[in-house]
Amino acid sequence: MLEAARDVIRAKGYTATTVDDICSAAGVTKGGFFHHFASKEQLGVAAIAAFDTMAGALFGSAPYQMLPDPRDRVLGYVDLRASMIQGDVALFSCLMGTTVQEIYATHPELRAACEEGMSGHVAMLARDIEAAKQLYAPDAHWSAENVGYFMQAALQGAFIFVKVKQSTELGRECLGHLRRYLETILGQPSSDQTKERTQ
Amino acid sequence: MLEAARDVIRAKGYTATTVDDICSAAGVTKGGFFHHFASKEQLGVAAIAAFDTMAGALFGSAPYQMLPDPRDRVLGYVDLRASMIQGDVALFSCLMGTTVQEIYATHPELRAACEEGMSGHVAMLARDIEAAKQLYAPDAHWSAENVGYFMQAALQGAFIFVKVKQSTELGRECLGHLRRYLETILGQPSSDQTKERTQ
DNA sequence: ATTTACATACCAACCAGTCGGTATTTTAGA
DNA sequence: TCTAAAATACCGACTGGTTGGTATGTAAAT
Image 1 (cartoon, rainbow over the protein chains, first blue to last red):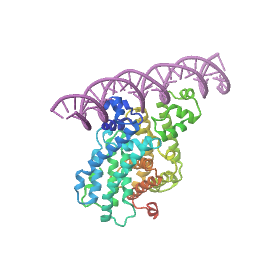
Image 2 (cartoon, rainbow over the protein chains, first blue to last red):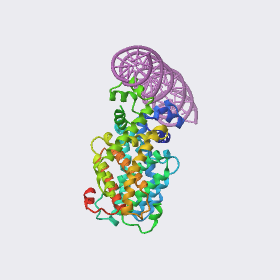
Image 3 (cartoon, helix red, strand yellow):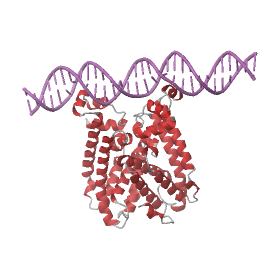
Image 4 (tube, rainbow over the protein chains, first blue to last red):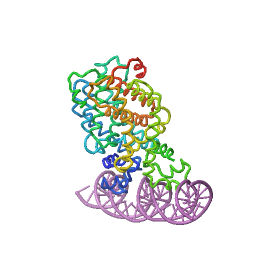
């Protein structure tokens, strides 16, 4: 049911998604729906929380987490996200980024759920960024948390352009620029895989 | 009427915006509305076209366009956008970026209108980027158009985080990172205004 | 006289949420 | 262990309000 909501909302947007849409996608009836959720908004909050948990598990157990160098982990995150940009955009885009655009001013609880999920994700990234900064750019005058937000902003923006231009390649290329920026501020990488990444 | 649509849609999203919302915001009745527009979707297309025209005029006549160095014009664009990130997010965010998130899969005409507007905007940017590349990074293996898309992606993502975190400062800081990236790939700037921009 | 620019009243479809009821599972007592 | 009761899970018809869009009318402009 939360999975059905996740997929339908990413495809149609939160407001355009009806409770009946979710019910038929999940194979339940309206009575069953409102037995579990007090309102459509509460389902949204639950779906966002579930999405956040899933994302945390996905990236927390990703292979790049095993890399010893924190800079490699930061770049590994970007590479993994780039590799996920393929196929249907509704299946790899971010439920929170999609939802918050519509409801930030009208549904405070949903907005708060998005904020918690996204801030937590950035905090996870910021740990590796901070460690990499200590190693490679200790004197830089940017904050790790801020770089984390910029990474997510570039990612969310990439999703938007995948939707506008209907091109996953464009999304991957945006992440290529993000990667090059991170390489720059975290010092030059040891290998020369940089050139390959940037076409 | 198009202005009313522009502001209401940026605040509530396209789907949640009702025709009555726009009518009361514009001081017209429903009859008047449907005299000028065949449907809600057609109004959306017209509002996006008007928004695009306005944006083209705004940036086309901005002071930074007079700068002789194309690199300064690219950075001037980013600075202008950063300076616009203040106050109510509904008044400086992008109608197309907001709308396309919701309707990319359900309203093909609206999506096409967003694509045309955003691609055109990127093309405008790409001219200056290309000129700056010729001057400062002729051998770089990125395309000016691609950098333009990345700039817009970072900008759109910054808008999302202003909405999520309700902080215009965060948005400006994201553009600070974008600026630093552009400085890097277009060569170091002659003046030392870089440090000021990055806090 | 005809078109344009609006207004008013209205409609059919749709929406989130309700309500009474039923099947299933869990709990509790003998 | 068997059973009564209570809680839970789920169903599907219904509702009151809303929505995009229409039909009809009117005043001004061309």
